[in-house]
Image (tube, rainbow over all chains, first blue to last red; front, side):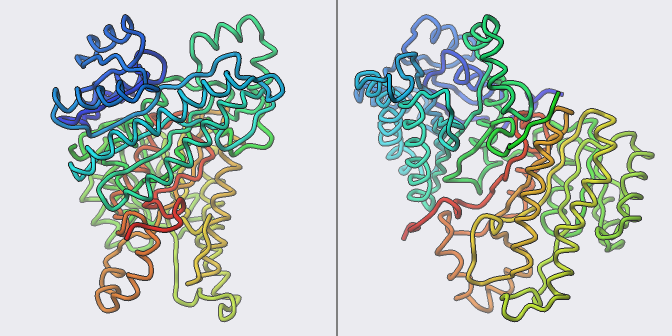
Amino acid sequence: MGWSNCQRFTGAVAVITGAASGIGLATARRLADEGAQVVVADIDDQAGIAVAEQVSGTYVRTDVTNPEDVEAMYRTTVQKHGRVDVAFHNAGISPPEDDSILDTDMAAWQRVQEVNLTSVYLCCKTVLPIMISQGSGCIINTASFVASIGSATSQISYTASKGGVLAMTRELGVQFARQGIRVNALSPGPVATPLLMELFASDPERRERRMVHIPMGRFAEATEIAAAVAFLASDDASFITASNFLVDGGITGAYLTPIS
Amino acid sequence: MTGAANCRRLVGRVAVITGATGGIGHATAIRLAGEGATVVVSGRDATRGSAIASEIGGHFIAAEATSIEDTQRLFRETHERFGSIDICFNNAGISPPEDDSILITEMDAWQVVQDVNLTAVYLACREVLPYMLAQKRGSIINNASFVSVMGAAISQISYTASKAGVVAMSRELGVQFARQGIRVNAVSPGPIITPMLTELYARDPERAKDRLVHIPLGRFGAAEEIASAVAFLASDDSSFITASNFLVDGGITGAYVTPA
């Protein structure tokens, strides 16, 4: 059973940050498949241009921590496509320097805060006036399941930044609810990225330490996160705002998991 | 953005809906059938149930949700006739006026609400799970409520306790069966506008105002907005979502001060 038969975004314009890889890429494909015109924003020109070509969209090079870049991203979108219906603020990082609080220095902390949280503030601040003037729009900010539960394999700035995204999103969702704008946080569980799979293949113990906490007994595919974004971004979710939309394989609901 | 009636994610799937003669059940029957599912409409009201079944090209089976024999027959007949049970939306529920403040709610009023809203869901899950385990596939959606996570000063004490029971039970079943291809989620609607409530609020606008001040979106939900969430949870688009409390609440649970 496929999903490509939904056509919920015909005539809609979607901006996706961090669209050149992973969840952003899968979502660009999914929304384009459902009829959206997609603006692919990233800092990786080569991959970004390729993705834009693939989804018949527009590539805009954007460093989401740079206010001028974010301005230009939305200005270009409006100039080229006339409007912004969906803003998926998905760009984020999780560098190895961000680790236990005991080992993470200020520079590493600050870098993650800028890319994961400050950029989302910037993107929302810039797109909201456009959506308010349209009287409609949907913002989805990528948080994480670690915004809701703690992990002993800590990346302290990442976790704090995603908690910040969650709280900010909830507040914006409430504040703009009567102006036709929905704002939701997407909180994925662990996703099977190529990098992660490689890491776990070479270190099965590391994989098992996580798997015992995931009821479904596997990591998510990026396409499964994209399907959730498509739901949230569509009118199917017209009564959902200010939510913490968990796509986590049951992790946040689990104590003992099944023996497989 | 267009409506969602163009999604066809449930072609070849068999869905059972209890309480399908009520607002949310009816809207969900229409939506799931629209997505291609074979829908078994279940309820007590044979006239209305048969009418809905013929409206959507489905099949009506009269059943009392609290009856063990009826519940067993519902799933047995469905399986005999259609060969599988892929989706089970346990939606039947009541909220009678005798269920009120804890100070004035009698034991029999308490008990009847527990029987219909919680015990019947336990029964339905117990009876449908063996079919889904044999198939190694299935999605169970149990109808709960936003009052499972928030308190209301206009209390219906047994209703509230029963719905929180549904959430906890769904979470546990979601975790327990996660590695056997079965997903179990609770859907928690915010206040939904029914014909009866529309009438009530037209006569008594203050009563509506008391509630709307707590709803960021500034309106009640529509049954179709719950149906679209159920369709998502029933489909493979939510393949990494289980054991969740899926809130469709207009932002209520995320809000402190709402927009003026």
